[in-house]
Image 1 (tube, rainbow, N blue to C red):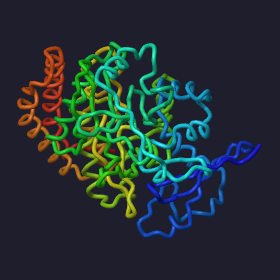
Image 2: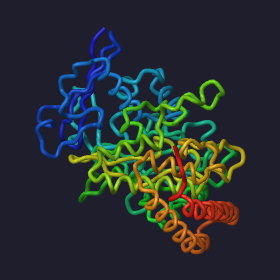
Image 3: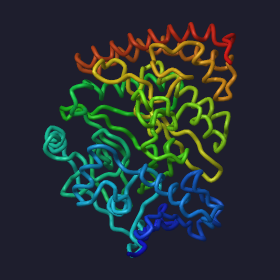
Length: 442
């Protein structure tokens, strides 16, 4: 048994080396000396700072490294397909990183130590026609959507079918080399439990932006099947190249594994529902201590939570919020995966993160919001003021957003359901804002 190594690159700069010892099962990450000494360098995450190079506790260090990198992998069927394509066990983290790590979320490319750095790799592109895309979308029950030309074409966390592509002059390409992907394609899910999800997410993103929450500027492509085109906020065009930006999700920021993306990390069974060691709202606000601006991040987190409540996104978990990692600290990334889950009666509506102690969105009261504000260190009057601001903005923006003619008649009906739900939530929030400053808590 031997140790195995992958080099981590950020553009043309070597960031460090990921090591795996298959005898002990331990992982390690060692920053490159030049990276550690550079003024513009940044760490993988707060749990893996550049300054702590001695790794005195190898076991603890290995756990943090494993958690960080496992959060880069897809989940569910996408992970099943990726593992099967490469004939790997889903438990073989190092093998999956070796196979998929060249193009993942964030700035880091993982390459074998014998491989030239990514800036020297030749560019290659392969166009996807609208007809081919439509055929592949419809053939998903029989052919994995993330496998093209016999190769896994993306390693992006999450459950939904996704494909990372490079878009130039409104044409779609699968690319390699310096041409990193710029967008993510998200077709309708195969499940009949979530009809018109593309329009749902598109509408919720536009609504959130009108409420002052920075979001990605998604569009709908019809092939004729609807596909949500999502710009990658971890990519930036620089002249003729694509620069990768380092981002981490809340699980990575909190040094938690993907299994802890829900606050009730062991589920909602009677014997385990009291265990709440996963990502919670209180833990989210603790990330602000690593922020470039703690005040700006706390306000951004509050707005993110209020929007999730208004649209009924009960599945807003720890992998649905991300942060840019910069030399001076963390900065909240644009919001994504905004979906009005509560309009679908077929799916569970329990909140991924409790508001106060309440996981039932229909039962959230002023007392629960008071607990949230106390736990997060926010002033109640500030929260109440933000509630009133956001509901005013919602009522002003809603008619124009509903009138958009790009939705089909079936999608318009779904949008009407969302609008009715958010107006009901806004009325509740107005009442809560009146009571919040004077609520008594223990």
